[in-house]
Image (cartoon, helix red, strand yellow):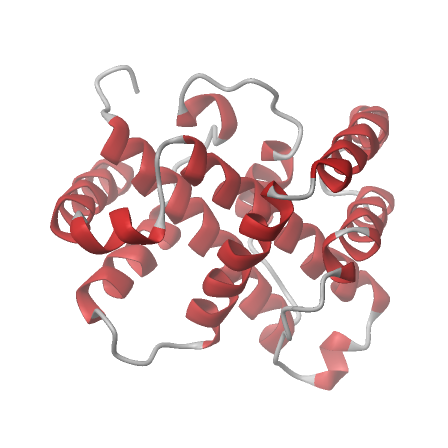
Length: 209
């Protein structure tokens, strides 16, 4: 990924954000998620001081890139629950950035969860429960909360609810990386065409790779 520019980095971060939202939607409506994508996103929570997207997301993000491409093409036209989750995560991340105490708490608890990940693996229910607890104890305390819509049969299952919250936390990670790469709402508006061109280039590479 050494030949990528800042716009490419922003596209990858947004693709990861959409990927997290897509997996939340899939869990809420179908009760399942893509194992490789889930692992890729959960692992991103434990990467410190990344220099490029490849340090965080070791697997391609084709579904996220495709959904981002569709989002950029639609402009302001109404979207799906996935779009709503993305907007909600961006809003929560902005609130989080202004809460240094909460950031410190999340960092400390992720450091503790790192040992659990190393022992059980990224897929384990114990890790998902831990990450869900971090999300509930921090980001869920803001007045604004993301309301996940889906089948109650799935949403009422503790295992699925934990995985959804873990993915929301991973979505916050992606939103944070996007802002670290210079992303903001104004930039998203004024560089939409450049961002879409980058997204389409990366999507083609992901599909061919």
